[in-house]
Image (tube, rainbow, N blue to C red; front, side):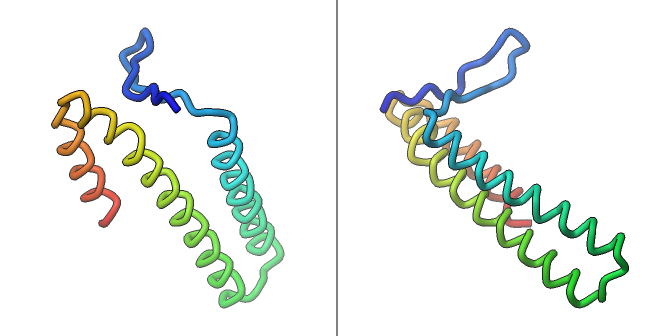
Amino acid sequence: MVCQCNNKNNDGIKYKRRDMEEKKNLMTRLNKIEGQVRGLKAMVDEDRYCVDILIQVSAVQSALNSFNKELLARHIKTCVAEDIRKGNDEAINELCELLKKQMK
């Protein structure tokens, strides 16, 4: 698989071309998370018990954490690895800064 990381569009914004399978998997996860959030809104609207809502919030956080882990692993295996192979050590600094933000 050829990684197309760190390309920039006309606005100077970085992007990465993902194959259809990767994009489908990520979008499926996001759609499930979106559904969970809509469920939370409905629970609040229906005046559901706090503990029940909090349990669902934990489920959403867990789903977001799983999404983050998957995306981070793919980023390291493709974008970061490709940049290192090309001699772009700045990718390591970028990854370290990202991890600091993720671990707050």
